[in-house]
Length: 172
Ligand SMILES: [Zn+2]
Image (tube, helix red, strand yellow):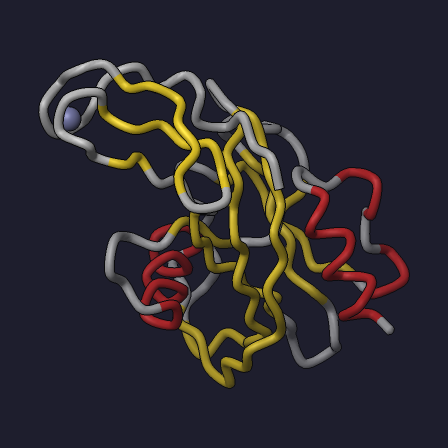
């Protein structure tokens, strides 16, 4: 895989000297010209929830923030440094929707990318779960939510490509 995702970085985050492109292992990477720091870039881990209710409907949220503001999304977010996925998922659902989860089951991993100031790859870890307590109250980064029957899932209106792929597999 050839990625230019990290080419906007100019200076070493440790010593402040210039970074230069250099072949390191099997890829061209940014390497410090002074202290030999290698600026490894990795897909950023996220956790997302496919939340279903007793009727078998799926909860989707509308994004209130960029990227892709106004598009449908699954609730979730980035893991913090060193955070385990399931505690991270519980934290995100508390922050985003004010709910607690039960029956959390691993569903799959989907790699995708999006653009902010540069191309950012995400490694999306997906769980199927249900709400154990709390009434859904969308917080800052969500403008609305809706329960969807499988046949009504808005495949063409998702914020990220991985969601359509995952939900087609989920709906089989
Ligand atoms: Zn350096």
